[in-house]
Length: 351
Image (cartoon, rainbow, N blue to C red; front, top):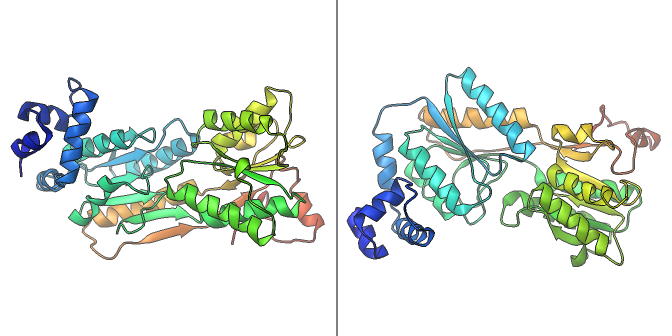
């Protein structure tokens, strides 16, 4: 199968197919999408992979992140870049902004630049393009997210337990009404975190109210918009779990702009423990992700694959920690007052 067949099926010239494959700008978005759909349907990627794998080693890996503006992903980038440098590896960094089409373009570009493997933090649950890479032997490691049914190595934290324990913490503080600002719906992280939130409420006999679940898209603006929607509610929950810290910060800022303060108006917990979480005027209670450990594990898995390891896919699940600050309305000493001795500094391990 070659570009002539793709051109015929897409109804374009071979020159247009070439421009799409080489990511040229002089192709209309509609035409580009039509050509990419044909390429994906025909599973054209293996030909590109074969050409790339046949060339010399480059000591270069690709790193594809969902949103470089999100401080969590920025910390992931810094950790992986530092570890790669210590191993003599170069990094080509790409940010997808949660865009499927842009992600496909980035992955194709990385392969054409003969990277030896790719670390991805941006995959969606229905990401068919990534599914074509692994069966053809190209080294791919998924970080922070995973794809059910895809035999790829992955490094994640226990997102379900993290969200479950955060919600349970609200309940133990006496909250009987807890809302949720979700992330990007079609991701494993959001699915597992929302499942943990719902399960904690269900086990406590507290109803899950659809009107108290907002979309936040793992962004400050999404969190801010969720805060505005929260303020318009006639009956508001007394606590809100946010799918990540950036969303939580946006949510809190929306309240601050209208003269409301956390935790007086509403208790808030985030997820990730980015640096800003501890710098806020009211420290953000959050679920900590061990970024350095995730980066180290991802690099170890990828280098194994690059080195020829062909064993079964491995998934490393790291523990989460509930970091208690003031935004939830409880001082860390609250745990000690209840006679609980598991408190270590400001972090409570999530089992």
